[in-house]
Amino acid sequence: MNKLFFLLIMFGIFLGCSSKQIKHTENTGGSPQLAIQQEIHNFGTLESGEIVNFSFKITNSGEGILNIDSVKYSCDCIHVDWPESGISAGNSTFVKITYDSSGEWGNVYQTIEIFSNALETKKNVYIAAKVNNQLFNQE
Image (cartoon, rainbow, N blue to C red; front, top):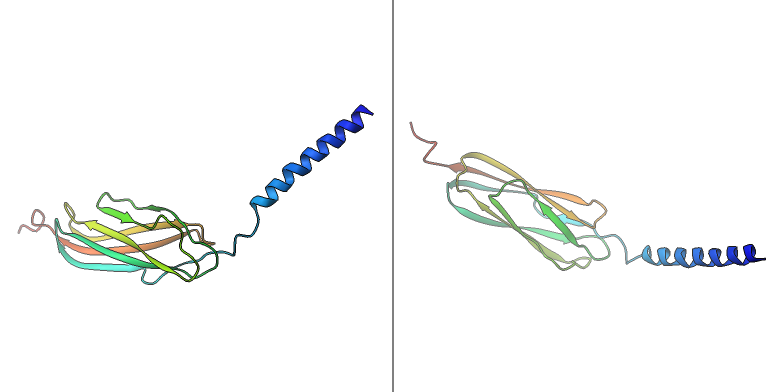
């Protein structure tokens, strides 16, 4: 009898835990999608030391709230500002890239990775420039 009572209590606990997990997986209004209007920006020819900006327009073309979780880049010459609040379906915002060409020279190509809660979790944008640096342009 005690075994049966114990099994009924364990079964009740198991069902209680299972229902909590189901609540966490409820539909939150659909899947957001990150759409980027222009994925590549060329700053053209710069003199070393110039600091330039460009804002990539991003749109949530899906359903539900789009959140940008993080942004990755591999150069200290880049700074990125992105929205901390969610982007509602159909709305747009900007990811601002600041590029500091100090110490750079030649053709420069950089990739910025944008991570979000969209179905396609990673999207890339790219910047390019030709940097003239007097230290390396001596004849």
